[in-house]
Length: 522
Image 1 (tube, rainbow, N blue to C red):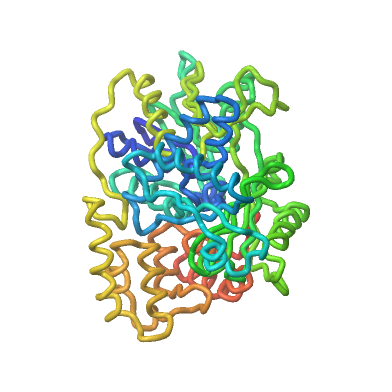
Image 2: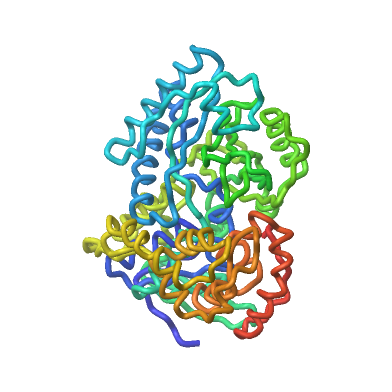
């Protein structure tokens, strides 16, 4: 088994691991990224799809005089602006309506959201505004009649799975080695007790040794397992909270203005958001074990449906297209016991005596600060300063991100000539650009006429796109293709099941025969 030697070995291909690899490559490091399953296959593809500072964290910061929460909101708002600029085809501004009770409620939330706007500074994306009863019901026509008005504010919405994927593939494009379905089974130490290598094992039992100057643990909710592999007596730091989402086939947000319910009976925050022509409802927040993190419970589904019925009582029926869950990695303070409720959505970068650097906690929006803090710890382990980052564009974006929106507009006219004239053409153009950005034209040009034809009325995916996912984007199963490279299974599971045989045949043709069924609970 020949050794592979790197400056940095990143274990975990979710948002934090992919971002660490991408930022490390930008700084000239020789990087390997190992993921035990699929890129973004866990928590990172199961978020609420919001790039946001967190309105509830801002409210909590002022109620509890918690400066840490305020810093978290400020940091996240700046990062929201970063991703909206760097990947405008994957991320866009989304307005959300927050219903209020009377004038006092309107003034309370108007003041708070004004502060939310101010904290974003130059990265702001639009000011909050009052909504009259008429405007609110125009935006959400099925909303119950007794809601007299509200406040609207802006946040970002994005495709979490594809941003995760494109960070990893961009790192690979610029020199990183990226391996999926490559779990790490052993860590090696040198004579001084410092980590020097990791051993991976594939499904066939073949082992590889990955020698590295520094090893980063970016495994999210599984961080403690790798920490114990490095130092068996270490104190556990992670708690897992499950978030369940429902996708309703009803289009409850026809004007693409979402709904935020700021306080449920048990103090949670719920969202009802436009999502690929459907409505995304979520999320719950329930402590759970690792095996149950991606398994929605009946109780949580009923909880979400109850709030849909409360706020949209005129619905004759509720048609569920899909339901899925993800585990949030919550970081408990180092001096707290495992049952502690003192958990926050901040992150921490820990360096163990063995040299293992673990990035823990955090949230999707702040994956880049998490990565930069991780690289600061990496530099200390390397005993050297890292060079300034090179400007390496994300796949699908222009080298100058300010040019990306203009080029996307120009690309649309070309795509109109390349794609079949059909009622779905406009939607297909939007879909291709929102997935592939400026690469959409080249991809469509490489497909035959038959490969460009939409396969589904729910989402205009085509066979060329499915084959690209398998041949170029490391998709190795039906679920990889239909739940993460495209989001069809996350929107309409029955429609994804209908196309599963088509995808399975392509996998076999590409030498990746995989009889595993479509599965959203792994």
